[in-house]
Length: 435
Image (cartoon, rainbow, N blue to C red):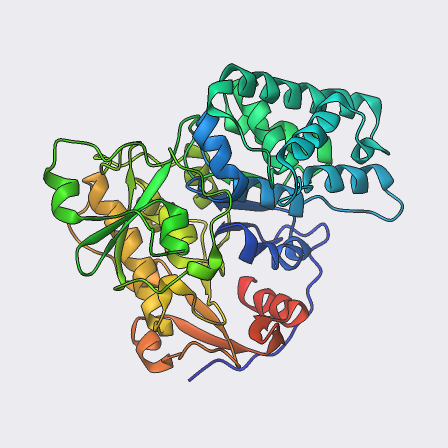
C-alpha cells in the first residue's frame, strides 16, 4: 500500500534541522529538479559522472583528452541563480550556456569562436572587465592547446562555450575540481552547493556495458544512443585478446544521428569502467574522497531521475561507494525518484528493476573493494521510492515493499506527451520525507 501524503510546509530558515542532500544524477534530466532541490536547502552536493562522450564533449576528448565534462557544465549552468535585474549574471549564463551553430559553413563557425576568444562577440556585453578577463584567459588557453594539436583539425560546430571554459581552466590548473571552483565563483553559485565529479581525475574516463547476451558496447554515447554503427564487441574478445580495439574516443560523436537509434539487443547486465583501449579496468578507479565525505555528512541521499545505466550506475559501481553509503551514520533517508517512463537503456523495465539495479550496483562496489563477501539488503541503499500516478513504468508496489522500500505516489503532469514531475508537488513530497 502506498503512503498517503499530508503536506506540511516547513520553514528551515535558521533551523538546526535544516536538511542536507547528496544527489546522484546525470545532466539533463536532473536539471528539471534543481529548483526543487535548491528550494529545500542550498546545502546540496551533486555527484556526477565523467563518462560523457557525446556532442561537443566528444570533440574535446578526441583532440585534447581529459574527462567528459558535459554533465558537469550542464549542472553548473543550471545552478546560476538569476536575481531580479542582475544583468551581469544573466549575461554570464547566456555566455556559458551558448553553443556555436550546428549548421552552416565551418569557417564561419570558427570565426565566431574567434570573436568569443578575442572578446568582441556580443555575448560579452554586460560582463565586467574583471570577469571577462578571467574567462577569456581560459578560453585563450584552450585555443592554444587546440593549435598545438592542429593536425587533428578541431571541429567547433555545436561547441559549448561552457565546455570550452571548463576545459581551458582544467588544463591550466591541472585539476577539474579547480576548474569547477573557478566557474562557481565567477557565476556566484551558492557556496553551500557543490558539484562533485565522481572521480577526481584529469584523465579520460570511459564506460562499457555488458549485455545479457555477452555483447559489449563501448562508450556512454553508444550505450544510451545505440545505432547500427555502435561499437559492439564480444565478451570473449574483450577478456582474452591481447590486442586492443584502438582508442575508444578516437572518433567524434559530435553529430550522431538520432534517427538511426535502435533498441539494445538485450538488457544491460552490468556497467564497468574501461581504459582508452576498451579493456576493463581492474581494479576499478576509487571514488572521489569528496563523494565519500558527502555520504557521511549529508542527511538525505537522492538517486535522481535520468538514465539509469549511463548516469546513475557509473557513480555506484566504483570502489568505495557502497561502503560509504552503508557505513554513513548521517544518511537517514535514501530516496529513489523513479523516472516517469523508460528510455532505450531500460526498455521493458518495471519499477522494481530500477531498485534492484541500484542495489546490485552498490553491492558490486563492495565486492570490488574486497571488503565484503556478503550483499546488503535493499533498504540499506533505498528507503523510499517516489513515483508518478501517471507513470508509464509499471510500479509493482508489493514487490518493492517486500524489499523494505516505502512507496510514495505523487501527482504527475504531462509534458511533450510524457509524464513528468510537478515541481510544487514534488517539493511537498520531499519535504514530508526528509524531516
